[in-house]
Amino acid sequence: MAGLRRASSLLGTVLAAGLLVATTAAAEARCDIDPTPCRGCGCKGGPGWREIATGRCVGFRDIDQKCGRPPSSTLCVFENAPGTGANRDCALAPAEPKRPQPPRP
Image 1 (tube, rainbow, N blue to C red):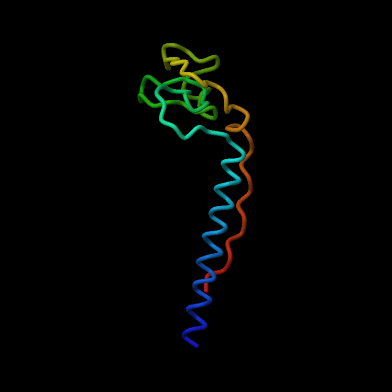
Image 2: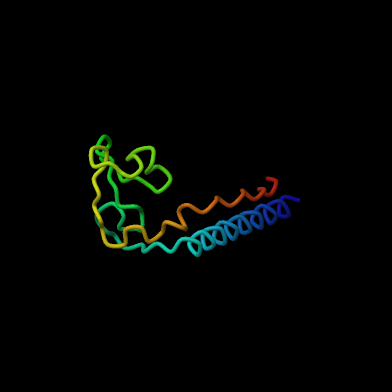
């Protein structure tokens, strides 16, 4: 009986790992992001603005709230890194609904 539980647990672990790989692959296919290091806001395809108050890059979803519309140079600095704006459609796409998790044994 213990061997059956171990095999069942191992199968659950393998299935969970497979699901994680499939989910990661789907996310990467949806947003093509270059994994090599780069410098400057927008170098991975973001809008290219850095919020002055925090010193952090601003994403497409936050830009209106943090930098204004249109972005104001009093709130944010435009860095115009290579690749700026390249992933806009991907970043603003609706989130995929969460898939139900398999029950834990």
